[in-house]
Amino acid sequence: MGVQAGNTRGTRMTFLSILLAGPSAHAFCGSYVGTAGSDLYNEASEVVLVREGTTTTLSMANDFQGELEEFAMIVPVPVVLTEEDVRVLDPALFDRLDIYSGPRLVSYTCDELYPEPPEFERPESGFGCMSKDYELSAQADTGMMTVDAEETSVEVESQFIVGEYEVVVLSAEDSLDMLQWLSDEGYQVSPNQEELIQEYLDNGSFFFAARVFTDRMPAGQESLSPIQFTYESEGFSLPIRLGTTNSTGSQDLVIYAITSPEKGRLGISNYEEAELESVCLYDESQFEDFGEFYTGRFDLAVDNQPMWVAEYGWLLQNNSNKCDPCPPEIGDDPFPVSDAIALGWGDVDVADTGWRWGVTLPDFYFSRLHVRYTPEQATQDLALYESGINDNIQQRYVQYETYLESEYPICDWGMVTDDPGTCADESKEMRQRMKYYEGESDEGTGGCASADTRWSVVASLGMLSALVVLARRRED
Image (cartoon, rainbow, N blue to C red; front, side, top):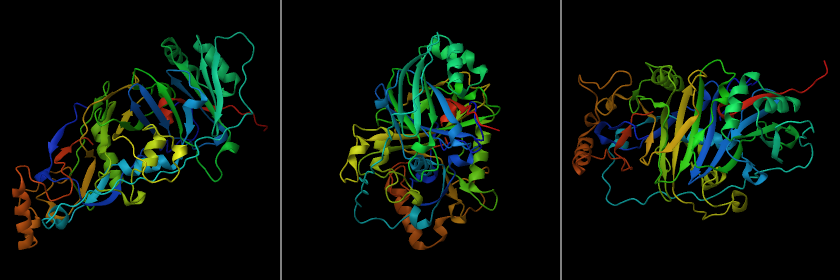
């Protein structure tokens, strides 16, 4: 992930989706058991993309493991960013996104699969409307970088301080000039980035460079604030190549995205989508820890190729379920309005909303993609597109119980065909319920609350930028 120091854990930073009818056409329901989140992947980065028309808001999480005073970064950007375009976020926001959308293990009882037939239509659950006041930046007016008067093609297009970051946006004609300027300012940038930086410059890119001053961090905050910027661009892509120039192995990137319902799930057009077994019975007596189980399945799915998996997709509408089942760790409102606002969705300033009730936002579709590649495979930046698909999917596994053998295949094995267990063995009443749900429609409902009867078998910063260590001179 570029030049870095001690980033061991990394950042907590399609039309071709293959859809199959789920066993007995069961909809989402059941109880949440656990998740396999991005913290299981070495050197995993996390970013959030919010796309409205030609406007992109990009948020990048930082979990740098070295000395924070030595953290710095450079990122290619399509336009000159100003102070109004850049913000910092609450680090806990990315933790909530990871828990909310991570591949999950769920459990089912027969009563959940085939509840007592309702006598009346239940009202839909409410959409939580509290929003939290985030302090987006801590301004300062000292310690800014300066440019030597020497002759150079580098120009400082803008410079400002936001949160703990001192930022400059640079342009140049020659990559050697850019590398020299960065070196003079204390950035240790690898010379092998020269050719790629020149390519970005020739294509009209600017470079966003930032370094950290820890005395500007919020009191009590131990990790760097995620940084966010908004820009206009007809193209929709994510630059990953600069972050691979000093990597020696595979890299994982988790992309969260918010798009309009009409635009739907995010996809990547220039890398292949992998197939990953899901909605199968996970038998903890046969497999390792669930997190290790899932990462093993992901490893097999990508099979040393530059590929990606759609791990989650959900249409979030006012007064609709936000997930099913929802992780209890993030409370009764798993995707609060304040989070969507902070990430850049809707024409609302999060700093002005406070803890007011009644804030509503346009509906949106939330995607989670997991991408893996090596430096040799990352020959192109990610070309993104909005697929128009807005059904709900999740990479979901079911805790094994004997009575579920007739409902779901066993992971890595398949359906039990020799006297499988079934909920029909439980009682006469349960057999009557099963007949009710099997006969309610041609497709069946499985008794669960959601009407979705389709399943998908799909499943930091460092990926986008060169993480660079500041060359701070210290006395021996």
